[in-house]
Image (cartoon, rainbow over all chains, first blue to last red; front, side, top):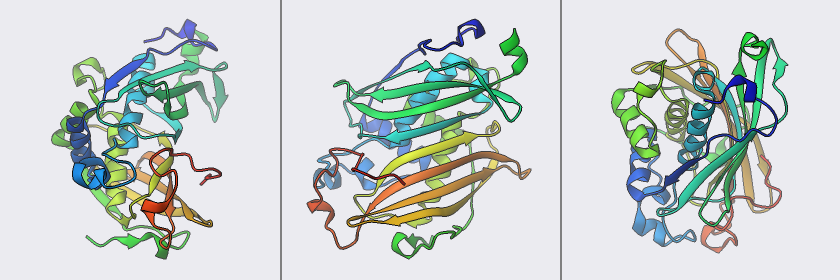
Length: 145
Length: 154
């Protein structure tokens, strides 16, 4: 967990790396109930312009949440906001890396203080799969240390 | 389970509520899928926030039939309160916005998830790009090459 004294502009978040596999995609389909054949049916997906199955975008976004858990622990688990854009799909065999950093100083809105983070998920070709912002609520007393 | 066709959805339409339990089997599948660390690493024992989001969006997609070529373009998520394992949650979805363009439709769907105490635990907005029915999905350039069609801002 990043110590409060390092909640400053530019601090890098701990990166997360995950290898995508069809087995994991199938497990995610089971967990989410999203069994769209583009995710789980190889034969079907092979006949589409995608040329094969792709991971659920939300599955890749889960890695960003893991990064935020590692960076902020309970502050992220108790609540927070994500605002993302899906840019490209991830495929079985891809290695996905999530990186991010704190931007700006904590801001106080509606009686709560928020740490802003910018993050991106990229594949092994350094192509962005997801780009987005995260906001983590932290108590004012922790900020004032 | 009945589903609505996206072309028939008026803005403001509220989808039928879905109720689901975030049970241990679902959480286990989720953790294995995304290689989430086990609960022993968490002080709170709460359900991973994105597992709640996954279940909520899964419940939503049971209510709407999207055609091939539909793209999940944007996602906003606001986690309001932690969820504990075995909690029963209710998902309420609403069509917030719809834009029809030359060869695509842009839909924004709002999702609110409540616990059994009627406390809002998660709120979100999901942006989808859908192909026009009269444009063949296999013929559309760029499908699968990019999730970022020019000018697509739900």
